[in-house]
Image (cartoon, rainbow, N blue to C red):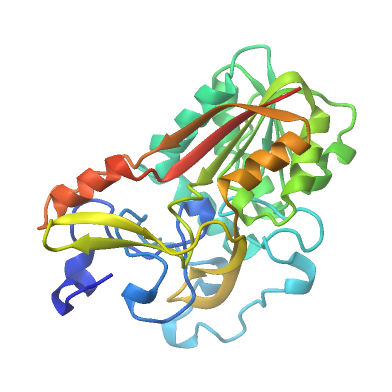
Length: 342
C-alpha cells in the first residue's frame, strides 16, 4: 500500500469521521500492531478505527510521559497468560490479560458513537432473541453494558468474566435481574452446573481466547436444547492483525482491502497503548471462519444464521471521502454467528 508524504500524520487522520486514532485490541474492535515498520508494512491504516482513548491506563495516572516507565506494574505472563479484544482469562494460559486496561475499557464503552453501541450490541440482541421470561449467559461480559441491555428488554442474565476489575464495574451498576461473577469461560459449566440458559452470547471476545473448543464445550453444557449461542467477531476474513490493510488505487480512485494471509491460524501480540505503555500487550488469535464452524459442530451446535455488519461511520470531507464511504459498504467489519444447541 502506497502513501505519499502528504498523506501521513495529521492530514491523513483528519479525513472524515472515525478516520483517526491508533488500532487497539478486539474489545475496542481494533487490530493493534506492535511492529514499528512504515505504515504500508503494518497490519492496518487508521481508516475506520476508533479514536485513541484520552483516558490513561491506571498505572499512568499522575505521571508525565517521560517517567511513564518508572514503577509500572509488570504484565505477568505466568499468571495471566496470553488472551478476546473484550474477553476474560479462561483456563491458565488460555486467554490474554486485560486487567491493566480494564478501567480504561469501561470508560471507552461509555462514550457515544462506538461500534458496540451503534452496530454490535443491537445486532447481537436481535440475533439472541432477548425477551421477558428468558435467562441468558453473557460470556466475557466485561463491565456489564450488554447484560444491562438484555435486562432492559426483560431478560434475566448471568455475566461471567475472568477480570475482577470488570466484574466489579458490572456489579456496581446494580442491574435488575443480573448477576456477575469472576469465572473462566472454559470452566464456567463446572462452576454453575445447576443453571440452564435460554441463550448465550460472546461479543468481541472469542478472538483473544486460545481455548476455543473449551469455551464451546462449556457453553453447550449450560444451554437448553435449541437455545441460541451468538458469537460476534472482528471479521476473520478482512480484519486480520498484521495480515490485512487498506490500499488506494490512484488510477481508479478506489480504496480496497488487501489480505496477505487468511487460512493460517496465528497468535498475534497486540499493544493496547502504543504511545504511553508499549509493553502492555494482549494476544489476538486469528482463525478462518471454517475453524469456528467446525468447532461449533464438534460441540453439539448447528449454525442457523450468519451476518456480516459494516461500519456505521461516514467520511464527510477529504479527497478520499467518496472512496472511503463506498468501501465501508463493501467490506464488513464484523461477523456474527448464531448457533443452536442440538
